[in-house]
Image (cartoon, rainbow, N blue to C red; front, side):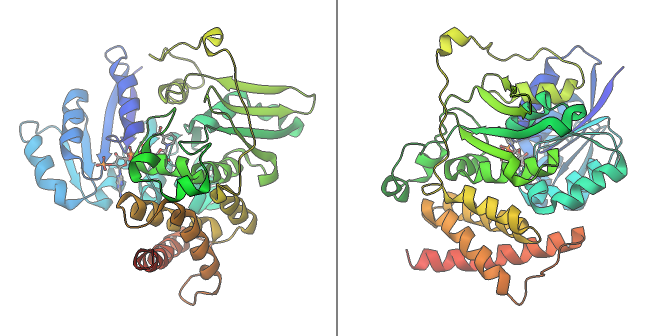
Amino acid sequence: MTRRISILGATGSVGLATLDLIGRAEPGQYKIVALTAKTNAAELAKQAIRFEAECVAIADPAAAKALHGALKDYPAIEIGVGEAAVCEMAARDADWVMAAIVGAAGLKPTLAALRQGRSLAFANKECLVCAGALFMDEAARCGTTLLPVDSEHNAVFQVFDPAQRETIRSITLTASGGPFREASREVMAKASRADALAHPTWEMGAKITIDSATMMNKGLEVIEACWLFDLPPDQVDVVVHPQSIIHGLVEYADGSLLAQLGSPDMRTPIASALAWPNRMTAPVERLRLTDIGRLDFQPPDLTRFPAIRLAREAIDAGGIAPAVLNAANEIAVEAFLADRIRFLDIAAGVEDVLERSISDADMPQALTAFEDVFAIDARARQMARDLMVERQTNP
Ligand code: NDP
């Protein structure tokens, strides 16, 4: 039976990897419903033509002309422009939707897809960081199956037996440690954009690559894991594992530690989510343990990587704190990528915003509905922008 598939964030790293798998399938196995992007009209149009998509949506109105031009000979492909169009096409009837927009900007379209009540392959961790309880409640209310795609969460999902939930002691997310795993604070203080983007094991979009360098990515993943697996933060461990071969582990009461191993290639977790509850072939390098030889593990260094501590403090505090953390981090990463602040300013700026948000008169202090999330996100972004300007002018 043909499965109807939509991909939100189709032009990004996860979106491209998803289409790579779909492009290798037998004809008729999948039907592409909607593909969405923010600005990359050329790539979106190319994908829509190749996969005969029913519709495409581009969030940035400035890219509309280019998209219309590139698809002018393909009238069967419906075109939507703007954030509302992305949400509307995300809600089109599909059996499986990949949520791979980066950042909190993905929350509205991901919610629109989730509300269809089918299978949501979930890469956009920022959604769960800023709206965890609301998002999980909405998924339960709509009967949606959430399939974790983040490699660590997908790994845990594969070895987490819900029938044995009472006997699960902890889960562990591994971290490569990023490009600064062994760097001193002095080296990190001078790190350039190019240094921070040079990830040792994974090829990913710019935002998550910087998050990996600060290790905020692992902090966001701890929060994501708490919601996805309904565990308290002290049952979610982080271990630095430079080879990125073991992605996640589940510890059971009998002493068994079950792990998922694989080459660091996102097509494995995506294939696992695409074929779930079955398996499919993925064109990834086979893992040969004797070639790898050894696997190393070390605890994360919370002094050099304060972002993990900040994320843990945010989930412990609850309420608005994770949403503030996420928004401030997105603005700080953006400022670093634009060479406006230094590398160590990212986590320091996030900490400042978190502290100031507690007494900020314009910051909503309750989070009980999605509207609150959007208001908190907007205010935290504004605070972070103001602060980045201060940091920029006082380097
Ligand atoms: P990329 O930056 O490579 O791609 C992001 C995608 O989202 C692009 O298609 C982009 O469009 C689109 N997009 C960006 N902003 C908006 C917006 N405001 N409205 C609509 N669409 C938007 O990101 P990644 O693929 O690396 O990451 C996507 C998500 O998956 C992130 O949440 C990340 O944390 C998570 N993830 C990624 C992994 C990876 O290996 N890359 C691994 C695990 C999780 P355009 O191209 O036009 O800008």
